[in-house]
View 1 (cartoon, chains in turn green, orange):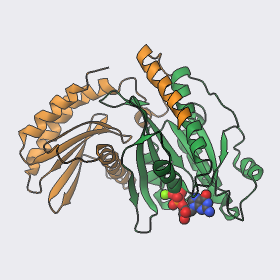
View 2 (tube, rainbow over the protein chains, first blue to last red):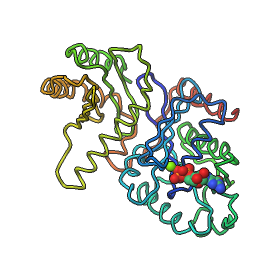
View 3 (cartoon, chains in turn orange, brown):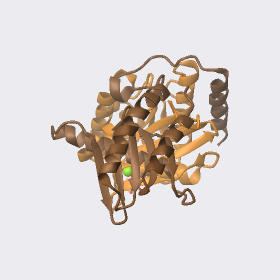
View 4 (cartoon, rainbow over the protein chains, first blue to last red):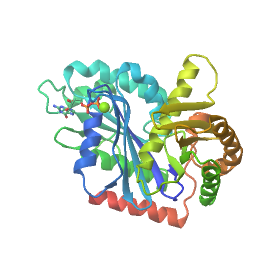
Length: 193
Length: 164
Ligand SMILES: Nc1nc2c(ncn2[C@@H]2O[C@H](COP(=O)(O)OP(=O)(O)O)[C@@H](O)[C@H]2O)c(=O)[nH]1
Ligand SMILES: [Mg+2]
């Protein structure tokens, strides 16, 4: 949590996960389709094909005094330095899993990298919420297998389809709530949902 | 907490001291815009987004320098057809100056050095109590006790979240 010069509380949320898992689509859906949050401009640093080069960014205001600054990372392997920069000062992580069966190793590698960056803070002082995305694809791995292989059983988990918005709002609400609860009461509130 | 207007007065002084400067943005190293002043405030720009990129560009250059083992970063200069952007380390923040193309670069460097001296301590004070994960590794101290007002604001946000 930081404060800006206008005295607003600013919380940094980062969407993390392997390349093409749906991070940008998730943010875009939140930005364009969810009412009730006042949004600033949507900034995208992407290549000509729309693949994220550095990050996407959109500030979302819950109340006049509380703003969530939401970032996505660039998922490709060669952008690992960019990811390290984007998660500086992060207050909460939405880890987006690609449920496609051929993406299991990519999910595992990305989650391991995230753990390396944040260590013990991940899921404790920095809340972590999981979006099992692309639940609509034919070759989606079963939820239980993903949880087991990625060792996700201790975190709140939401099944999402970013292209149609299924589950997105609830996953975001859950993360934002955790972040505020930690600020207010210093406790972790929810377990696996 | 210190009065944020102190940033404005320092930034206003800088922007007035050199005719070629159009805009100054002070950001932290996580992408947050702390303060900004502009000569042409009628041109509405997205300051949060610009600040996020300014911070990221500087941090990316610093990382590049470190990967290439060429030492610490002083100033990032970007030259455009009709303008320049300068970004320099400023204590725990990054000072970004947007200028006309023909601005006196030596003067900008001098201004940035002076600003650094003036702003570093104000920034330290401003950011005190805010997490400093960027610089001191893990900073996981329990949240300090909130003032009544802060608590009200955070609780209001919590209630707001249930609505949308
Ligand atoms: N079927 C399906 N496709 C998705 C879903 N989410 C994202 N995609 C697609 O996956 C591709 C990569 O998405 P993108 O958001 O750019 O991934 P990013 O690299 O994580 O930012 C795009 O073609 C999206 O339309 C989903 O839930 N289901
Ligand atoms: Mg993307």
